[in-house]
Length: 189
Image (tube, rainbow, N blue to C red):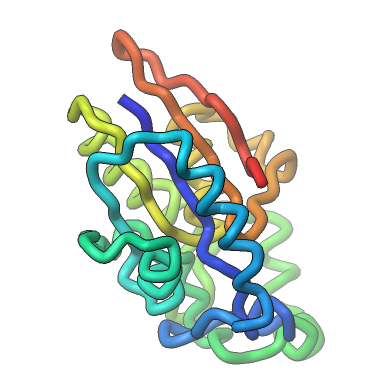
């Protein structure tokens, strides 16, 4: 079985460095990135496609030519709660107390009215655990932190968190074989 994860295409929120909202759309000028993604996906025989519930993931699936997909909220981006829609600079300047607390509890601290990184790791891991029992090749269109969290379904060692970055349109591929979870590629673009 293979699990192929793709980060959604470039959004205006990505370009403007703003915490995305659920309805964030793809940036038309960045669609060329997904053209490369289409080429990379030709190397796989995909049996099922899943997206997060967020608009940009569904829009990416459509652009890539996958119309028959299922959405699952466990694949959503981290819920940044009260920070959604705000610029990263604004939040850093005006929410200093949160970031001071985050230094001592990076994975467990929940964003105000949102989630923690551990919450995302758990829900994404639950989805992957469920799907890894199937003998299929599945494509998942999701988000940067959600895909990064999926790595820790395999690695378990959170100390490696800063070692990974997930670009828009990139592929991260896992192979499940004889009960072993193998990382085939990360951030392939």
